[in-house]
Length: 72
Image (tube, rainbow, N blue to C red; front, side, top):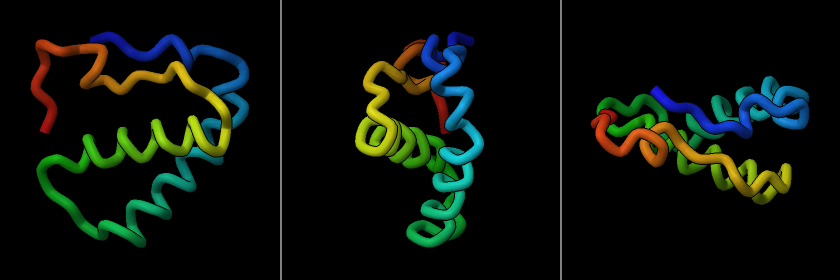
């Protein structure tokens, strides 16, 4: 499975834990427990946070990078 090259950069690694904590907090507050499709909401929010807060524009979700794989 392909992953975004952005996740291998120093810049991403410096903010990774902060980003994940913020994503977890927002997902719990706004969405609670979600079943199928959770990953798509998570990735969409992650892309938005990376762009707006951290000015990282080139991150791609696993769904975007692996079009032949079906994610639930």
